[in-house]
Length: 307
Image 1 (spheres, rainbow, N blue to C red):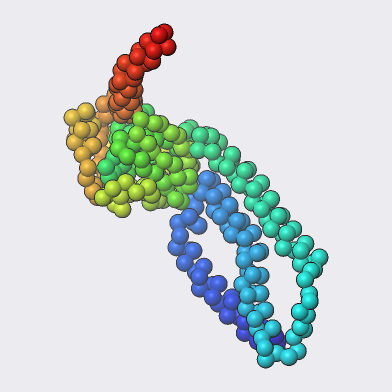
Image 2: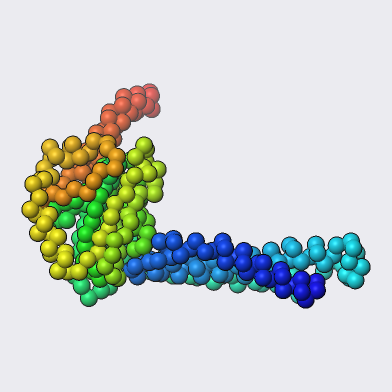
């Protein structure tokens, strides 16, 4: 390939690459606002860079080889009996092996470091929030403040957030992309998630698990504020006329789409545990009914064994 052609090819490749990755600045995953999100961004970029070590040469050779060995290029070396090259064998086996080893070590290390059950180390006191997935909205309970919200959470920046997550409906996923770590919410089960916002801001939260008609609108706002602003917000919520008793919760459980942010000044005691136990009772009833159905069969089997 002539030098001028090489320069043109490299220039076109750089322009195309810049065009395709120009939208990455608009992706919230690449604009993290917490230690968990920052580590996840590092893993994504490092994995992409390692894979490009293989992908980029393949694309270059896919264009260069046909061009160099075209029928009209009589200067290209023609070796019909060529069948082996130790140098090529080392490259095609050693390079991928090194890449896979590095990816494996990095994945193992970050997976254990970002375990959602591991509390985050910070100077501030951990802050507890209970998240409940409904059709098609999010209920957030603040057990220490005895307040609750719908489709909105407000919390102090630089304070560790200890989430307890469950679902009062089908399986969904709880995800604040700029803070990191998506985790599933399942009925009758409680899971944990630890996050931290390193600076004040408004961050988008969402459900990324298809869960019915209102799935696309099942979003919420996660707002990180200063400690003073948080205390002021708590006082504002406590002045709300809305109270989350069991009657109000039953109405909240009914399917609805695009619900506005709602504040509740008080919450029924242990509402989160009540939601969990409701499904535990159903599972126990189903289990007991299955045992009763199987009892006659077991008795008949024992009679046959005796005979």
